[in-house]
Length: 242
Image (cartoon, rainbow, N blue to C red):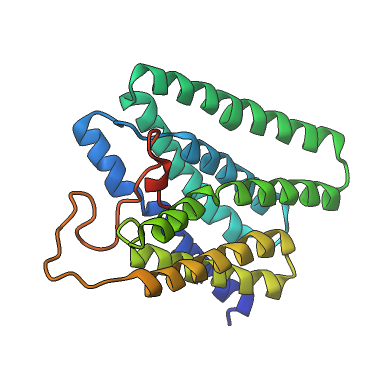
């Protein structure tokens, strides 16, 4: 019989997988257009590092295989997204992406892992240090939802905040928060509790500013209502969604 932690861990894997898959449609359009246009790569470089760290955390902490599996999957997808930037971004953005990728996704995680493994001999201390790094970089990824929430308040429109993605973020945060409470893992609980609060706030904003349209105009990137996750635009950060 499956334990409660396993059940919520599996549910968390499903919802987190959907969040990681959200940008696929956008990146497919980038491949088709062979251009990233004005979009920025930093959020995806940071998310790749975040995936690495949580994968490492899930590996070194006992009974955390579900944390490792989903973040290994997420890191793989984020690596594909960053690679697409390196292939199709204009020269200046390609150079910036390459520097960020080398520093944040190669040098930093390799150096951190070596230092942690060689210097910290106590397993519990290793887990705590890696968990703290995971917590910090998870919080660092909150810029996108905060930006789009600000846009919704300013424009009084939910055009750039798709309901389904907001709902999935809400469920994802709630699921992993329950998992964290059951397993008494506050490194997972704090960022996901914060994510749950942000997801709740997005749904509240959606209820406040949603207005039915007489004629729905299909967007070229998300006419099914789920989404391509809109990337953060270099010239207009407020158009980003998580």
